[in-house]
Amino acid sequence: METSVRFTPLSGVDAESPLCYLLEIDSFTILLDCGWDENFDESALEPIKRVLPRVNAVLLSHPDVAHLGALPYLVGKCGLTAPIFSTKPVRRMGEMFMFESYLAKQASTSIDFAIFDLDDVDAAFRLNPRWTELRFSQRHQLLAAMPATAGGGIAIAAHAAGRYPGGAVWRISLGCGEEVVYAVDYNHRKERLLNRTNLDELLSSQQPALLISDCLNGLTENTDRHRRDEEFLDAITATVEAEGSVLIPTDAAGRVLELALLLDEHFSRARYDKGTTSPVLLSATIKTVLEFARTQLEYLGSELVQAFSLKRSVPFSFRKLSVITRLEELGAFPGPKVVLAPMPSLESGPARELLVQWGALPRNTIIFTERAQVG
Image (cartoon, one colour):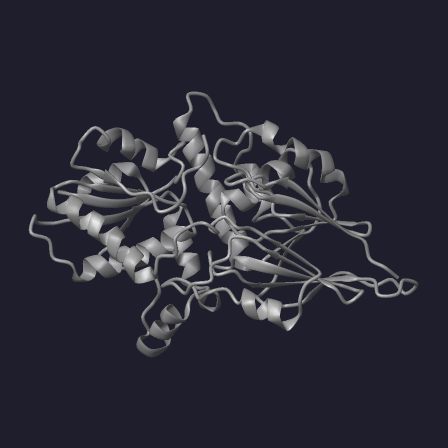
């Protein structure tokens, strides 16, 4: 018996829009991610809301706003009750992303931000009984084969995407023997925080009938990790030597960890002529994020795992990088500062406040480590 597969983009078909797609396998409908952007414009979710009643399952690939930002709204305001599947880090880090986003929006508006609230975040993540956490390569039967149907059934498995802790490439196996692979925002290069994706091995083991992927970096010049890090640190050094401070807008629970490791490593060996320079990680949720990340060795890169195994070096136990949760605490650090702070879009959050404070001084620098949000 033939299996019908239909793929419909709801968002995420241009350069920077949030990711959300509909995958229909016969009469079973899967929502692949449910991203939003940091503007949280309700009208952008109309295509999702129209199909929500027929969604049977939700697969989440990454923990950031662009991949699951609409989840609190869809669960809390729109009544989404379909089962949700992800790795454990995507669920926990995703909660921290949304918690930080809510606090940032609340602090930046003169009226209460009411599109979603912390109760919606709790309902979508921590208190959601319909959420199933899968380990990498763990096969889960999403839909059992019906006895009267030849070749029925759907199974799923998450594989490392290499971009965020727990971030996944999804392998969707159909009862007819064919496969669909959902692979977006993967990283094929090894970094401090994570190993590279195993997407190439995944595709070579069985060619999928449908590969859903992106080419966001297809025209980007490929710079090796060491050269990229060197340029980043050189910009910091030049600013600090000129007695300026550096602002690095970043996310709340993902790439911030890679940057934190790099800065701590650099300042542990760097010596500056202009006196004390303070590297600081500022985020309302960062202590919870770090505490959780330390317990997830199976999702971290081999460099961190090896350091823990051989030296009992606890991941994210920083030697030079200071961790604070409130902007007011920054006053305790004299001299030039290098600050990692959310949000990367500068729509709201501590990074926006620091931009206002520091932006008028030519000696200060702002370094963007990812593409800016459109608008």
